[in-house]
Image (cartoon, rainbow, N blue to C red; front, side):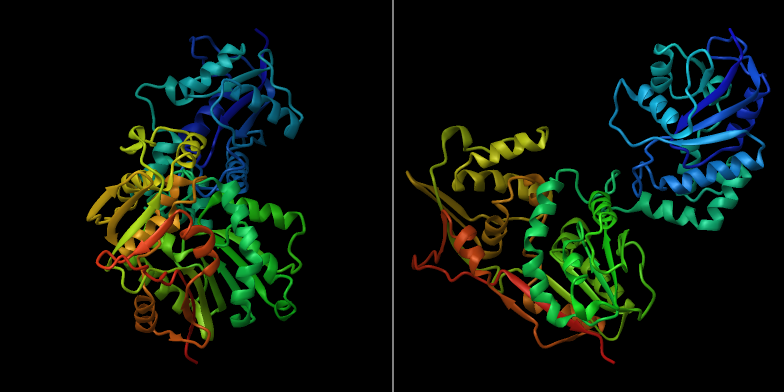
Length: 523
């Protein structure tokens, strides 16, 4: 076979080990064999093509470092080790039998090199990936898999780092260690890997339909901005839980904030990516708009006393639901208080639990419970669309049956149902008012049913919020109030449902559903 001129080295390359560099140097010098034991003849002037896969995916346990950091690391290591190299970013793609061809096409497009079985050997130790290249006719250099005993692979070394084992420094290439220290990447990676509220893909939940979720936030942004805008203090304005930036788009058009810096922070990788995409399209009138994927519960994001206004819209109930309940709300409040400047404000708009949540009520629901829906279906193995179709076809009474199964299992809350009577046209469920409102405020979110059943809307009452905020140092400012969303009552809560007093049968007034809290830090 003719000598090869390219060594294709695909991988995520979050960390480069000393072994990898030594192996690549030996390979370029013609001192290695392929996975069949045949010598690999390498032409003078051959170079390594580092294919950085999942280059469009970052901020997750699977890909903690962004592509630009990984590319910089590879370049630094290559120069220091005298490895002739080029770097080819490869977009994140789902697992596929065409993965190898995707990498090859990306290499040709971004570097001008055209890897072929005749001019390229693929350096790869992952059997499943190596098999894809072998099937395409490429020879494979097995890297770690070709050594006995096999040295630790980069991801194994990364996990040592996460675990706090200093041995990772001895196994990583010295330039990797220096690069990590320079940008404090070890701390960043540990935070991502040890975050209990965020999944491996960088989101609170994997069952949310982000298309409809973003659309819903955008549709409500005009109304939400009209609600919070009168209370905003110009300066550094932060939207925590910014979604795709809909609220900041309105803020960026506000003449009062033309000199302000606007920051959007969200834990969701999907939403921050969409916000950045909108920024690149010129959606925001104010050029000083910035976005970051962060979890404020894991570490402070802004310096002490540096923020004029923090806005949270429909965020705090998710923190309570996906985190450690009220304890995490207190941690959030403490961190926001610390980063708020004297005279600055935290404006919180969210759902609210009823004042008399333990009061028993009769929840009267339209529609019979058909025999085949008397027991909740197991939705855990279904695709999101299948879950939608199943829940959407249920009557209000049948939907409660499904909710009574999914909500306690996913949210950890107890509906405390005291009784249920099914008649020809209606079903009456006796339970605390809090449980009734949990169902009524969740039941219409069929696009992301399992995700919404994980969330609790009624953890906090108005009095709970006042106690929490004053205990950390805030003052409750003018404009703060609980309120009942009359549109929600008329168009959602009361459709096919009613609240009655179990003793008298009289209607129970609809409780408060939301709060607007303006918490001011004393000067």
